[in-house]
Image 1 (cartoon, chains in turn green, brown):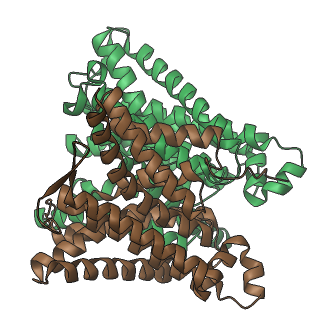
Image 2 (cartoon, chains in turn cyan, blue):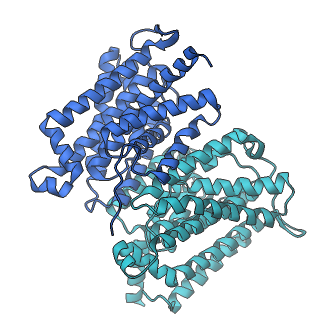
Image 3 (cartoon, one colour):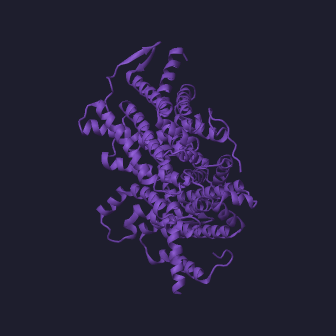
Length: 330
Length: 293
């Protein structure tokens, strides 16, 4: 694995994939498809953080949907009810979720073992109660509606295509930052931690500090995604930010595989598209779609179990094998 | 607030607390055997109620037999889950196992929805809708059943742990798995047994409560989290601590409804959970064990 140099083939593949992703609104006018692919982009932003947290730092969070929700409600509230500009709302959402992530991670990561999974589970459930009960801010169980589209200065981002570009632009930027991070000193430290905590500690790596920082980054990315989501759909309600949503995020990270960004991104795309299969498979019958949606939970749950038991490498492992084969042939 | 009213809240706290205690015992048994938090524990509670309803309403069995079938079938599900999923992860990596139980939880609740439908399903009260008066407070007969069954389960577990070879083997396994294996204990079998027992305890709680609350495919996670909070509150890995934790948590919830408000009732357990995790992760009854590097 070359850390500092990226070989030309990877650059070519990335450029091609990037060009394809950004060309989609030029190739189709199907608003439903664009909306679904925008959701994929939003999940890609969250999963970038989850990939760092699960795949690199080896920590499980069962509460990331809560950060997603905090981001969404924060921006929705200050922009819709207090009249802040959109950028201000998004920035505040990122700030609030960063601080929240720090407050949660500091005490739980100082302990050994899997306290973070438990603490995030409790935190996620508390936030679910808050989203429902803090009616003055969140609108309660009926949700928060009338959230305006994103706008910068006088420029409103109000079409399906523009929202698609906005989300995927942010997603690409976050992926680039994350890719940079895992190639840096911090990235090497994370890989060392994954290999052996004791070994990493012996090398003088500040394990707790590193884990806390990764957790804060992942919380901030979820908050950012939440803020973007609120303005894309215009309506948010507590059910979107439930424990169930957190578990689906874990399923994406697990299916994606460890020590990879591309794997989790592909896994996120795949699992996000399951309930919207009709957007990407033309001619899919109504009853087939309903069957897929009916079994959606089973697919997520069995995916988690099957990947962990039989293909621990997940999508990332498959990609690595593929690239080895490619190199042999090239 | 008068004494009678306070007593009423105490009784309600005991009732909920003993349910949490049964679920917490499940967490603690599996944690002692494997070092893993079983996030599917709440689903055993759901299945206990659901399978009993199925045996009673769909198979037409008499209620006591239906309850027995419900608990036994849930225990079997717990055993199959361990054999089919947990045991298959050969390296026993705790992180992977925890995430597997998260996946298992999703599959179990979804399966229950496929098999028994999305609606709430009732079960009749075990012995009619009567109640007795305790110093002026009302105690429903079903609550007596809940308290009695919990006490029975705790006594049974105590007997198993202290008076049988199997229980001693389980305790040895909890103290030190490698040492237990060296003296000839089948530690893998103990893991399976702990899943069977944990599932049965969760199922018993679900069965006892369903006549009061009905049950549905999605009741698992909420109770699971509270049982988990109770196990952490008492101190993970210690059965007595799990029971104490359950009862204390039930009381805390009940008292907070009495003195604060019921709006954030469901958040109380979670705030307790976070507070204990952050300030006293070994629980109120646990001894502090400092992690050495």
